[in-house]
Length: 82
Image 1 (cartoon, rainbow, N blue to C red):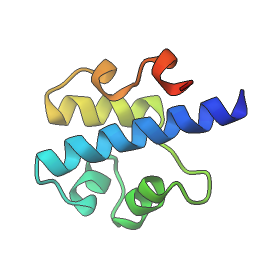
Image 2: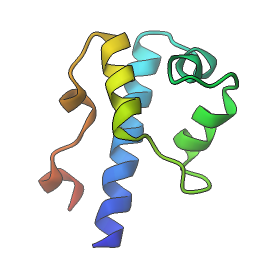
Image 3: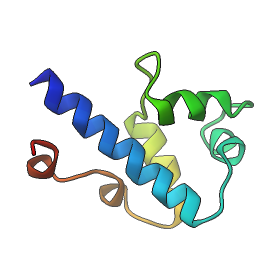
Image 4: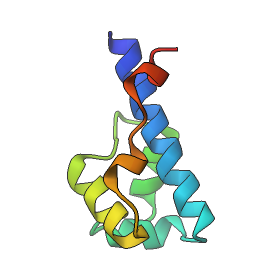
């Protein structure tokens, strides 16, 4: 189960990064959207270091700023188990 959760979180990080890159938004700009002053927070999330990941508030803010639905950032559970 824990392995599935890690893969699920990895896929969320990947989806957010894909959307960020597609919109040409820097890690610094995304950090600022989330209320941080440094891109280091986003770098830690994108490399999945220190058990840092996006929470629901983050996903809401990202989806709002990107003009998408939160659901667009969350993989299907069945896909995460493969």
